[in-house]
Image (cartoon, rainbow, N blue to C red; front, side, top):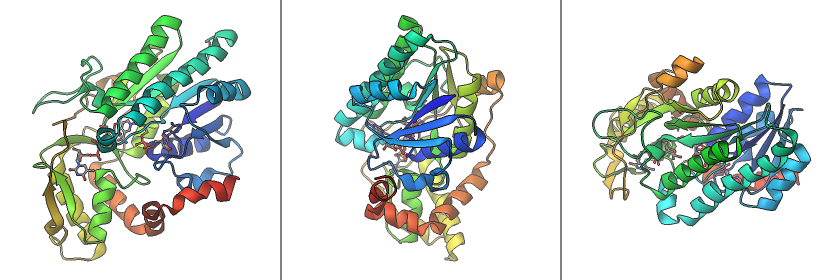
Length: 348
Ligand code: NAD
Ligand code: DAU
């Protein structure tokens, strides 16, 4: 089986590529990534020489390149993760979200369709990895199910909702075998430190302010990134064509509570007085259109496909904090921009 994984040099993509390369030596895994600021090949050093792994630098907004790639590799399946992923950046500059997340997805759908309509759709699969943010926001109660109406609020979530709709349209219109999953907030190693958890851990280490948007009483459902990778593996192999599966950690935290726990954890790991880091908490201007609460009902994936998260939140948060404290070189290379030279060094 030849599988194209897009966005494999990013946070979730790198965990997924590692899992697939190691678990399925008979699969050929091709990782296509533009290497934007969020793409870091140093995340994949341990598998870069594996015989069943190939890296291709490329941009999914380039329709011609996508056609050529499908022609050359004749992929059986696509697991599509490449995206602009950060909500704050989408508020500052929506256009790259529209081109990559929407146009890029359609380019991949078209390239797959052109090849697969000749060979037949039997054994083929286009898997779109999406987000719970397409459902908008919850109040104090309730959970997102697969039937929750789409109601995206940010340019990021609107672009992901749009790409979900387009992927479903290719199923209904052209009979393309597709599957979609919508997942909650991931945490763990290799996340770009613009996102809340790595940002906070790094700032605590350097005794810098910890910016909390608004009153901090916004809720997210946190999932260990390795559990998301096993969920994707499960949906890819067992999910039914045309279906959507919600993926979540059953692990809701208000931002302020999460940050306080991280503060005490990192103080403990650094041998500092517990309570010191909490003094760095700084309430700042709120994110415009900030969604109040996300929470996932993951009953369908549990009952139908037998997947559940394996990592307990307390264990996962401590491991995450320890990883960012231990991997100072990774963090320094990411924050200085040095990681962006890795492709030239290794591949050209
Ligand atoms: P990320 O920002 O860490 O990685 C995105 C990757 O896509 C990067 O390697 C980047 O170089 C690549 N990329 C961006 N534009 C590209 C383009 N035009 N062509 C080719 N490659 C391009 O993102 P992530 O957090 O790993 O998220 C991966 C996917 O999972 C996204 O589709 C995101 O919407 C979805 N998702 C993320 C979360 C989360 O909590 N991070 C939760 C649910 C769903
Ligand atoms: O729900 C899934 C989504 O989770 C993914 O689709 C996105 O790709 C991913 O980025 C993430 O989106 P969020 O906006 O929830 O993640 P972020 O880490 O940016 O923010 C988490 C919460 O913390 C959110 O309520 C905003 C808040 N926040 C964030 C930052 C960066 C702060 O209070 N301060 C900050 O400095």
